[in-house]
Image (cartoon, rainbow, N blue to C red):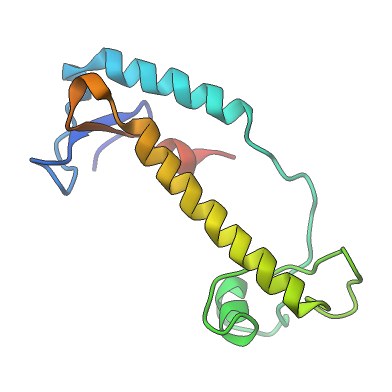
Length: 139
């Protein structure tokens, strides 16, 4: 198991499964990417609102999975009440909820794309920094 808490660097052309960390060979790239990531993190929105799950209390599966199955026609979407209209029923305005789920999915894809672009180092083609662990470990 690799320890990438300080960032790992992989040659994804020759090591597509990212098993060989070569960050010790390119410490400057790892440092530059870590600095850039810390700058981006400063602009991240941190939600301080506490929501209420829209799932029944007696379900045995994860709420997100239950909502995907019963509300979002198999797609991942919000699984908490919207406070925009009222909390009496989950997603009282279902059309708005589906649009919000779409935007959430697009935002998720945009972040993944940004991460790939951010991790590309022009001077070290075809090397990429794998800093995904930073995103996973964020509070």
